[in-house]
Amino acid sequence: MEPRPNATALPIKWEQKNRAKLDFIQAFISRPGMMLRPLTDKRYEEKAPSANGNNTATHESISEIMDGEPLVQYLRFLRRKSQDMKWVALTTFMQKHESDISKWLSDQDEKYGKLVLDSSMENPDYYSTGFHHQPGGFSDNEFSGLMYDVGLDISFATISPGGVADLVPNNKYERILDLGCGSGRSTEPFKARFTESEVMGIDPSEPLLRTAVKRAKQKNLVIDYYQGIAESTPFPDNHFDLLTATILFHEVPDDAALEILKESRRILKPGGILVIGDLLPYSESTAYDRWYDEWQVVHNNEPFFADAKTRDMNSLGKSAGFGKVEEDFRGKPSFFGDRKRVPGMPYIVTATK
Ligand SMILES: C[S@@+](CC[C@H](N)C(=O)[O-])C[C@H]1O[C@@H](n2cnc3c(N)ncnc32)[C@H](O)[C@@H]1O
Image 1 (cartoon, protein in one colour):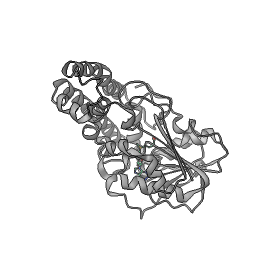
Image 2 (cartoon, rainbow, N blue to C red):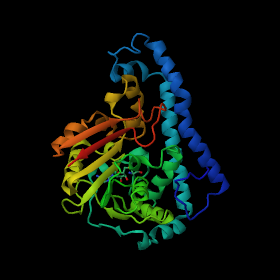
Image 3 (cartoon, rainbow, N blue to C red):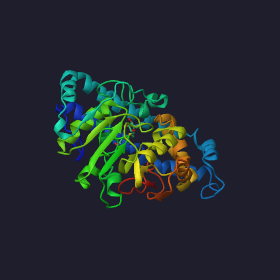
Image 4 (cartoon, rainbow, N blue to C red):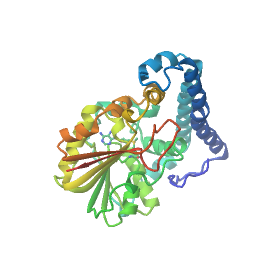
């Protein structure tokens, strides 16, 4: 596997046989969609010539005629299998180098920002779902964060590194907080762009935050990382000029989404903005794209995927007390549909306090 420009530099070199395995898995993850999507589209046209392009087709009606198709079942099997293969390969690597990686992760350098842990924090119930079938989820063991982080390079080799940070207004921000910062990939571009700002990230997962701290050092960026949930943060009222969240909202249920918006409003200064980057809502997709996307829910364990993609962020933002909520639908028709991709995120919501 060629190291990606944004990859975390690990303390251990991949052996040739492991690199070859990950190279294969990387190709195996992207190829089924690239190769079988056109065949799936063609099969749909054959099976439902009148439904295709007809506005009365719904994702449910498409599901009825397509889910039993061997081609579709094969495509979903390949996607699930390739994801599982990734986790097995990464677990084997972590276990083999357990003591070196453990020592490296626990060796933190405060020069690149604080790591503020909260041992009393309890994860919300929905958090333990094991998104993307990652064994143990985001935080079950000390390697969970690094596994997720390295896994991103394998699954999404083409995601633009700038992300949401490239899309926010060019203002002066005293303090910026990234909600659901994960391993810091969405946080770092904010510090790189707004060098004078105090930049922070918050996430429930200690293993992810420990990975984030290692990455900040590698990139020579000073970022403070906090353990916590976005529904209830340790920050005072009116504290931040800019809050941001990259692909957090599709991993939380509706009631949590509302709580996160309310908490965001509390900690934003008057006039401050919350900028969310996430997956394109179904309102912007065709019924066919919506049906095609639904493999994510079961086969990739994304239980809140459909909720998030049908969520009305505009009225939810208003319910949370935001004065103005704007939506920018950028990528069409879908993020995972192997169609047109846009730099950064396909769907941006900006809420102003
Ligand atoms: C798909 S990851 C995105 C991570 C990061 N923003 C990125 O772009 O790489 C979603 C992140 O949201 C975090 N998360 C889930 N529920 C959360 C919550 N209630 N509050 C804060 N973070 C949460 C997870 O731990 C995970 O790191």
